[in-house]
Image 1 (cartoon, protein in one colour):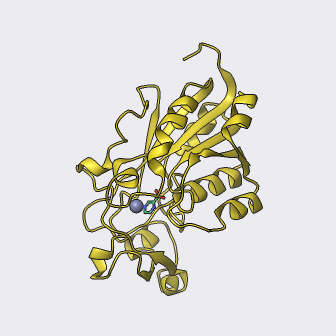
Image 2 (tube, helix red, strand yellow):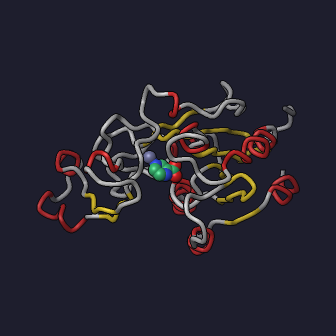
Length: 228
Ligand code: VGL
Ligand code: ZN
């Protein structure tokens, strides 16, 4: 690692965990990401953060919780107690339903699948963001859940480190990377997704177009190294 630091830059590694790479919800092709992401970690970012999907057993996003099959769909609603606590209108919960892909059990707190993949150079210089920790709330974005009931401290931490540019890698490109990148752009950061460090669950999706439409820049590793 060089001593040089490029002020205002942050690396955000999304969910590079055993279950998403070789485990219960393995993202196709994700095993190739170890080397490029380790190479990216060595670039002179001023701030580094890694997120973890961190679910309790019986999480709302698990097919098993609903007696359904993985990859079935359902509708989920914000939990009443959280809506109440955050001053929302409990009468309107039914209007706030969202389509939810149901997943195999994954990234359960205390299991081997929740750990970062072996060899990933996430060291003590990284801040760690945990998400999906509430039993009844799905949370793809490392910033907050889709109803904005449970923000993490990621946005505050980025501001505290004077971050202006956020560079994202990790999995899954069509879920947590996409949601996190869009929230980063909405929060006003210049946001870049580095394709050589990303793989998606489903093939042929429109995630890169969707991110671009929200102001996220899509770059490859060559372009990242040119910038850093
Ligand atoms: C993710 C599915 C379920 C992700 C998390 O990290 O993209 N995908 N939970
Ligand atoms: Zn999850």
